Length: 358
Ligand code: 13P
Ligand code: SF4
Image (cartoon, rainbow, N blue to C red; front, side, top):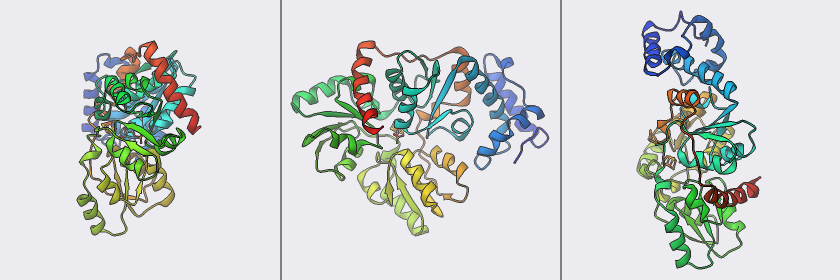
């Protein structure tokens, strides 16, 4: 569908102007005009199944301004699968799970990386591309897993289990990564654990991811009590109720979910693996047991699949909006820095993982 000024209700235009007025340099945002509507029509095509014609006039001027600023600054936007569709499909240059975004951060030729994701992802980008300017649109975009463990905790674990290698999930601070042997993401955790050739491995901080990995390997896994505040809220009862409603519903879960939730699902994998599952298998109905924006992003590309949405939002991911991305590129804020000595040690651990999975 092509959206033009004529089809956009007056209320939407008023709201679009309100967004513009809330920004410091509102005059830098283009106006919502028939020309802009026509210019951005191909982008609206990408999201028309999940963004209403009422919403589009709010987003279009910001999208146009962000894409212009990206050229001016030689910047790229790395958009995580949990970003809302207008970010993910309309301004994201590279989209994916934590591992895919880390790999893009390592190879991009851009001068500036804007991380449309959370702080640990921006730190990973800075670790892998220290010469680049890495920006996060909201520095408060944290993560309950990253908060659950410190570098001192990892040193204490090493003392308690001498000689046992330490794997840390990428959802950790640079300081924690610097203390470990290798990092992992949810898409390569089993491979990383088994690559170490050790009968015992410490895998921190996500207890549920570690328990999931334990079901896939003979290596003994020592866990930590960190949890994702979004995934720990799902229950097997709610999933079973979806299945009872329609037995054909496919339940697809992220490994940060509790073990009884994973047991109640048909497939478990990283956010990228969950998307692949839907695109390849095209179930009639699906539940993505993860942050709820991801279902909108997949629905934009698979209108033939009906998504049942238990909506758990990540409050950290949702701090990233088009407005904040625009301000970030306009004002070159907020720059993410990592102490060079910490970054050097963390880089070894992250690069070891990236090389293993290349
Ligand atoms: P992925 O590595 O699967 O993208 O997961 C990151 C994350 O934060 C999930 O909550
Ligand atoms: Fe962290 Fe969970 Fe949010 Fe992912 S969804 S960023 S693990 S709090």
